[in-house]
Image 1 (cartoon, rainbow, N blue to C red):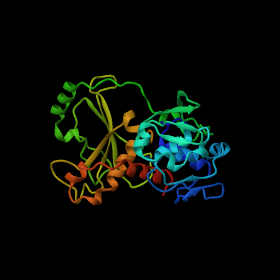
Image 2: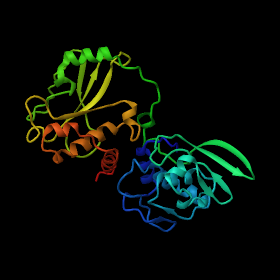
Image 3: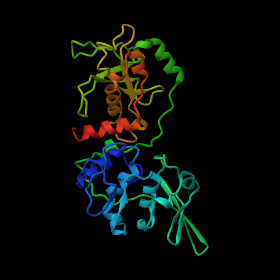
Image 4: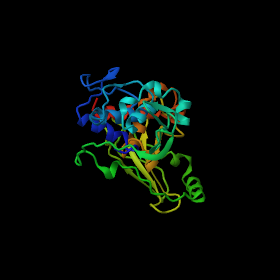
Length: 314
């Protein structure tokens, strides 16, 4: 399993292997319950990868794994040929990790990147033995049995194809033509399922069928121009569940949009924009007015937790 594997794939692999979303034990052992926790899935990706690779790590001599350590510790476990040599104390501080200080019995290993860096694709390891220094770059690869019918790689893989830079002049012209109301997408009738959207002729809207389970919400997509044209974009929009009552206002509908590009699908795959908007809508009751709710941006952790709850239908 590659380090940039979407969290969605990791969670599905865990479920496939018999793990459940319940409170994780303090130490994972051969006899402990197969539980991986109930929150912070996106930020704890390296920990989840260790659980996916549990059988492989045990075959390398690992007997137990703590569940509440920093991500640098789990990345070091995954990268080490002798994971039992890695201890929480060996990754002593964030500064040590940034400068490459991870010590094990008879060797010195350097792990690049701070704890919070989930975007690193490689772990740069530096082995020091007998005064000889050998550097190499190792990708985290874990043998995982996957079901091709369970996960669509075309949908979930992260695209690294360079996108054309947007034409700011075209985008400005579109904004001037469409006006502020159209930039936030649409105004929807509360008494009908029909979608009413104010846009110019270059913008196409389409009702979007939700893919995740959860609160009934009104989604639609908005696409400006066509792929390849300067200024093109495709985004998903949702209407606030309180848009017809406490968040109603005459000048601008309470709604939120999220681009549907590769950057917005990097952690959870194709359904991440919908999960983001669902997390935004779920927080509606925290705000007394539409203005504050529209400005709200749900945290990455909240999006990941909502996504997984939807995935497991609870």
